[in-house]
Structures are given as C-alpha cells and as structure tokens.
Length: 467
Image (spheres, helix red, strand yellow):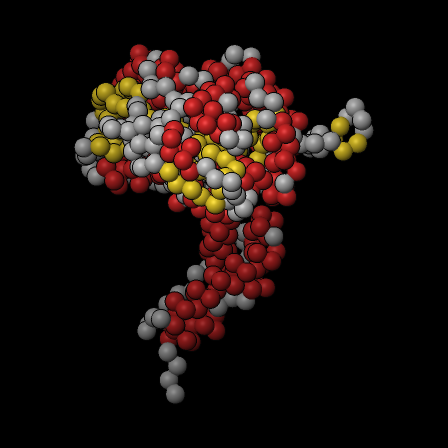
C-alpha cells in the first residue's frame, strides 16, 4: 500500500514536549500559563496535521518557533478583551451601544478608589457594625430632589420592576395606551408589568388619553396609576396626555399611588440649550408622584443604575422586598453615582461629560472641526467641514438635535463603508457616521486627548496601512 506524501510527513511533526522546549515557548508559558499554552500548541499541531493530509504533494512542516508563534497568536486572540475603549465620533452623546454616558474624572476616581481595596459599602464606622449600602447615594438624592427617601438598583428596568412588584402585586395598575413603550433590547413596559405580578389596565388611545379615562377605570382592585415618560419617541399632531399634577390628584382622591417612570434621569432643564423641555425628575416630585424611577447613565451623566425616589414609607417597602437584593447596585456604581450627584450639588455640571457636550458652543466645535480638516488635508486627504447635527441619544429627547460642525472625508481609493470598517479595526477603534458617500466625524463627542489618535487612525486607514 502506497503512503501519501502528506501522511509520510506526519512522522516529522514535533511532539508537544519538543515544542515546549522550542525558542519562545518559555515566554509563551510565562504569559499564558502552562495548561493554556499546551492546549494552544496541541491545536496548532492538529491544524498542521490536517493541512498536511489535505495536500496531495505533502508539504513542509513549519519550524518549531513558527508553531510556537502561531500558538501565541491563537491565545492572544482568544483572550483579547471584547469590551474595548473606542473613540465616539458619531455625534450621538449618550450612545447606548457605546456604553451611554462617559463618567466624570471625579466619578472615575471614586470608582477606582472603591475597587482598589476594601470600602465601607455596608459598614457603619461610627457604630462599628454592619450598615446599609443605601446611605451612599440616598442623602445626596434627597437633597437634590426634595424627595423623602431614595433607593439605587442596577438599572431603570429593575427599578420599575421592583416598584411594581413591591407596591402593586396581584392588583391593577392603570396606564395609558400611549405610554406602553418598548425600551432598548426589546423590553416592553407590559412585559415588565407582567413579571411584577401586577395586572395591566389600559386606558385611552394611542394618541390621546384624558383624565376621565383613568378615573373611569379605577376599581376596588386598583393599586396605582403608572405614568411612563416616552423619552425614546414622540407623538405629534392630535395628541395629548393629562399632566402629572392632574394624575396625582386623580390617584390621591381615590387613595391610589401615582408611580412615574421618568426614564432619562434629567435633573436639569434642557431647554436652556435650545432643546425642547422634558419633564425632569424634580418635576415628578413637585407634581405629587409617590415614587419616581429613572436611569443613572442617561441625562444624569453617571454610571448604569436605576434610581427610585419618593415617599419614605414606600421606598422602605421597596428596600425590604426580596427582589431588592437581586437587583441591588454594586460598590463601583454607588461610588461613581455619588461623585456624579455631588457635581449637581456643587453646581458644577460642566464636570459631567454629557452636559459639557450638550452645552458646548457651536463656534468652539466649528473651530476644532476646521483644525481637524486642515491637518487631514495636509496629509493628502480630501477633508472639509460642513454643517451637521448632533443627537443626545440614549432614549432621550427623540427627534431633537443640536447644531454642530462635522468633518466630512471623501475617500477615493476605498468606499466609505470599507473606510469605516478600517477605522473600527484599528487598535483604538473609531466609530463614525456615513452620509452621501462621505465619512463624517463630529468633534462634539470626541473626548479631550483623543484627537491625535483619531486623526492618525484615519490617515492610516485611508492609505490602507496596517492598523
């Protein structure tokens, strides 16, 4: 029986023991550990064996050091982090896919300090015994909002779920059909309601709901009226909803609760920046809402968190509910949130990146865009500035934009989609927009210190250089 050249070459394949003694193998083991290194070398040998068997004429076996190098590349790729920093040049300030709100320097420092060692997460230094993690943000939230009490959980969906489970389980909750919203990831308010054990009662129509619609739906089984701010879409034209004060009056006249899912976490009036005003967290408390739920990583500008504020007796019921432990916030989120809230208390919103981007003057953005375009043109790129729009994003202020000035790059040797792909493949990925065959870069969302990296990545990508 004739042996094929490929099968004959298998006799010359090195053993794992031999590869572990080859040049570079020691560094491989030191970097990744002996077991992972051995597994990677075995996988490389398997691939080499399969390649030899697939060749009719056999082939040369790579030198040992090349096989070790291939194992290193395999391990580096397998263990490379998938959660990576990127440069956001899209102009979308609260970009859900890119992590929503970037944190302030103080919030980052607070989180790092809490992470580096032990902390008073649930320890009372004065009493020398166990304390509560609720205290770290509660006093700041009550001072900022005027609410009696506050509780922090891990996101706003959890906040709404806990609120309904603790206060409305096995009872009816009335909600307008125009507020049956779907939030990110396909999660819908009716689904959250169902998971809480509350029973949904829909009133009104998609575009209009009146105060009497709520009043007519109240029964002996009704626990609350739920108002949901549709912060991720707009209903325009022949549309209307009762204001929160009217809903509070309707609920309280019947001994019911008014619960408000404010969502975006706005503590400031966005109207001063030329945007349409939206109900703030403080508006909910002033209108008489019993509990208000909102996000920490949207317009608040902090870490991911779900925040609940309202009447002390109700917040205490939430705190004692079994679900509260399952959805509680961790020490890093609490530390960063406390630092973010302190910026509001000290009237320093410019320290919060989200608000700094929203408030950034158009002239300042235009000057930076012109400087970028000039540098790119000097490097031989077809770059110009043009008017554009920035968006708040993150399910906030739908249909609204801020005027901006973008850098438009017209690639000649590569299409805009390929150029965008090259930017994403860079060691520090750059995320941009494409419009009318041009790549658009918005300085509004590029953080301080990122400009030089962004422009270098773009120059290399347009020349097809290795990233």
